[in-house]
Amino acid sequence: MAEFMVVAGDETGDTRQFDVDGQDANRFLGREIGDEVDGTAIGADGLTLELTGGSDTAGRPMRENVPGTSLKELLLDGGVGYTPARDGERKRVTVRGREVSEETVQINARVGGGTLADALDDEESEGDADADADDDDE
Image (cartoon, rainbow, N blue to C red; front, side):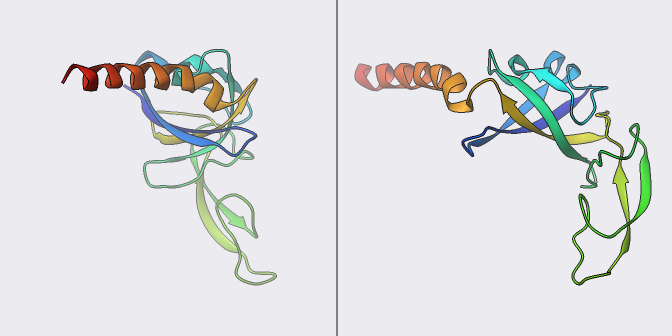
């Protein structure tokens, strides 16, 4: 069964991590970088998530120009997966394809249609109210 950590960020710079498993994780399987997923997968109703990248179990990054889920060794001179130390430097790097699979551990996403704070504060404030009520009982 698939299990992912989804790192979602919005235009205000707010970034949050969500552990997703079960049916919610299945919404991500087979999707590619650039695809959109409903925000209910992370508990943010009314928002959409645009997949921007991710990494696999060994920390290898997903790269948009590699099709499928396979591993590929590329000679890179910069971009996702490699930052050269000096001009003209290149390196052979193993990267993963752009499709989310069982090997994917982390998924990076951009939030559209609102902010994380607005979508999630309602749930957090309800939890805080319950905690405050428990404190008053003591």
